[in-house]
Image (cartoon, rainbow, N blue to C red; front, side, top):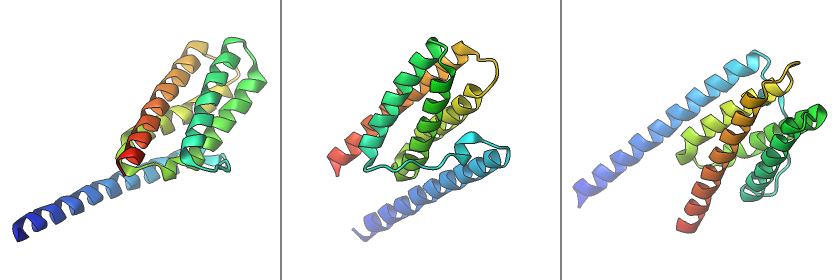
Length: 152
């Protein structure tokens, strides 16, 4: 019994050490991109009531963004990109550490989406691809969050 408790306690330490490592790497990467003028790093976090609602709002804005890109609505696309970034900045720290890989992917894609939306010439295919990747990863993160809430 004591051996089992020891093994479990060591597993917990190892897992928390890995989470810390991921968070540190993410923080360093975010600081590095912020120093380069990253729009996402400069976006003020949105005011949110709860994570599920914020993720749902973000998903809706991602859908609207695609429509704005497809119909060449530049100002709408910029506004939506900024709103997506603000929502992401509000929820990313509230998500489970178990979702670190998906969070990093969303972070990178939202950052790229924001930067490329403000380019003078759009690569519409690239913007739609980024939008789709964000949508898919948000869906996965939302599902994982729901699964965790159900299990707790």
